[in-house]
Length: 295
Image 1 (tube, rainbow, N blue to C red):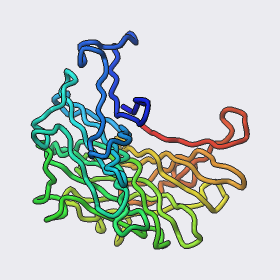
Image 2 (image 1 turned 180 degrees about the vertical axis):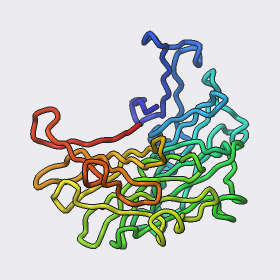
Image 3 (image 1 turned 90 degrees about the vertical axis):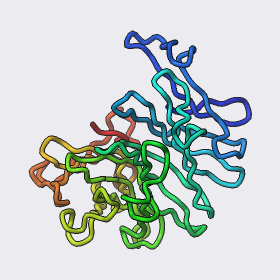
Image 4 (image 1 turned 180 degrees about the horizontal axis):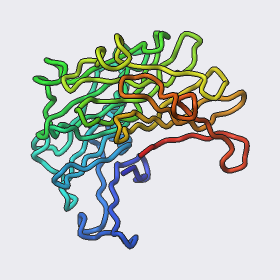
């Protein structure tokens, strides 16, 4: 999933390829689908993340311009590449607009009950970004009953104490159904700290079991530069440990980082003796190294 230029703006695209690298023309007759103007603004539509459910349905999260700012969008497609118009019928997609500024969908997953979970950010007061998790039922309605009743989404700001931007860049669900998000939060310096937030399936922070009593962890200065630590990818292993890939600033540029935390939110010091590792200069250019995804 991603986007393609139509000459004046960008449209969201899903491409599907066969295992031999040829376009799968059973998918929408062409091997790809294009969608624009989800938010009605005749501007850019971007697909930032993609996932599948147990029935082969395709979900893409991203954003669409409404004419004034960006709105978070979830598109749902059937396995044959047609919009699933039973999702937020009759549209086949949902749009979330906080009303004051940009709403961004950066990552998407399906939880154990089949709900669609998206993380990103929202500018709720016209200034700083707040981390958001939206939870949608399989029919495209917000899960206002079971996820942070009665709204169907959660918002968190100021994880690192800087009273400024908080962003979610990646999301996963562990075997217990707990929702884990990584991203970044500006501290009081100000610079970015890596954050992992842990939420129960009902949308409450897991303050009991994850870094009690707060429900999230922050980490800075992994590469020694005391600035700009960001989590870009997140997964859990077979032992329930949480692994995050990302980046951290050294004295001059960014280094790739992998952090590993125990299920209770403590750094796993059996991993490289510190709970994290740093790698730089993989390509030999003495510039930035970033880890965007982990599996």
